[in-house]
Image (cartoon, rainbow, N blue to C red):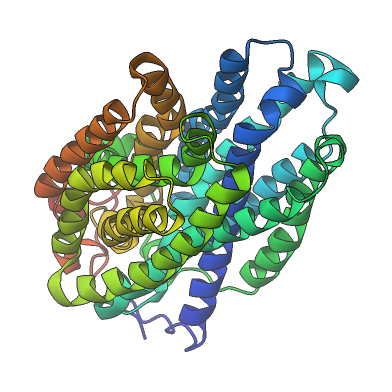
Length: 450
């Protein structure tokens, strides 16, 4: 029984919640990775063919960034409904929209077929992707964390984050497969296949989510009549500093992951004169490191604390970019693989604890909104423009040092954010007894604990 006397979730629900969240995260990063890979390899020719090669690449990568720009709107909209109507229904909506948008990319006409309409439709689909993902990740985290026992939230949250690498791994495998096609077939129809195949993942994810029960903590909040009328207003009034710190805290992992998984393919071709297949062949096995190390970080977080493990990972990402690029410069397969491995170990230590760490700094009644907005703002500042910034730095300086300094700089910012970001006491998430309402928002008791 819960504190309010409501029945506790069935034993299998916390595992089902984990599976549902993991599938959603996998679909999210599969879709975003496929788009990133395509933007680096084929979109410049298919949708911006008459531009200068450098401008065409920047335009294609910018359509990658556009998806992140739409995320704050999605975070506010889906955060509002997630904190007011529940986590489950919101997550079904976000996953369905993401799947539809990604599938639609695979059906789009190219510039040769539709002229200027083609890039407009591409950008529209990307905006829909970003809008849905704005609520997807935060909601998936909450369903996993709020169904789990507090003592194992670090580990279960980290398992959710292995969906990041699973999606990346699957995207690269599928894309590597279509790259084996002759160039004319790849550009004619092969590039569409990875986008169309996302429908299978979405279908499985929706099936699991529809069978999932609502989060116990949201059920309790609703039973106590603690649901906020305007969560976004109360989040910034009560927890604005935490939203900012979450945004800054995610910078290091966002930049590291995006440059390693997306920009590295372009860097390998332009700076190292290596084939696309070679770079993907290095990236794929390195991705397995994340699958192993992220859960390990979660286990350590349950033992030593989320904040300690997060800071250790963020500190390592100050120096590891220099090691990564130095090893990439060798052009030797095993040394490049070592570079990716080391970078992903540092990334895993920091990112593995994000679900438990960042979600629990907010009270449960505002958690969907606060987590989604903070995480999304950080992604825009970090992931969204990282490929463009890296491409610009390489073009201006002619070398990798400026990119490594950029990666190290954002990691310093994340370390500082982690030093200030602390989780409240366990009792502050949901009050143990009902309290009088205050104009439809949270109670004075809750507000004083934020």
